[in-house]
Amino acid sequence: MSDANARPQTQAMPRALGGLTPYLQLDGALKAAAFYEKAFGAEQVYAVPPDDEGRTMHVHLYVNGSSLMLSDAYPEHGHPHQPVQGCTMQLHLTAGDIDSWWQRAVDAGCEVVVPLDLMFWGDRWGSLRDPFGVDWAMNAPVNH
Image 1 (cartoon, helix red, strand yellow):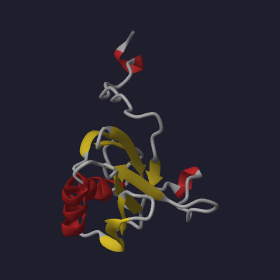
Image 2 (cartoon, rainbow, N blue to C red):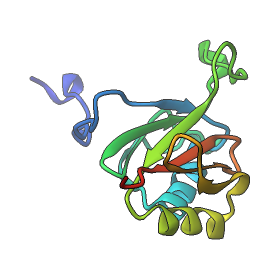
Image 3 (cartoon, helix red, strand yellow):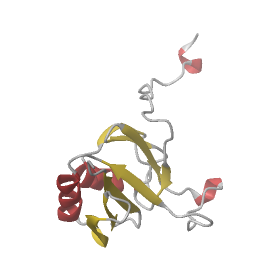
């Protein structure tokens, strides 16, 4: 193959973890990825470099043993940012040491929506909202 027909070298896509991967379109995907590293211990395992406007078409994070993928909106390519319709946009994180997960997220700048507490179904649960408008529910099963 001649150099004119050679494909550019790209980083291999990492393996998606978990059985279902949320893919969020946010205003500021790279900023959100950096925030999620601080607030939720996320590890960025892949990112397409930003364009001239600072947008990225793909970021892949590992969070608590699962994948989370992010992108910015690209209205000029038929992908405008639209509000969520017909469902609730909430990521649900389950962890044994829920207090440390909760405190790290609050310290990073998440807003408490429902305080972490023992709920009627028997688990400790609470809800936070991050600066990008995504709700995060946190749950810890309580041994009965």
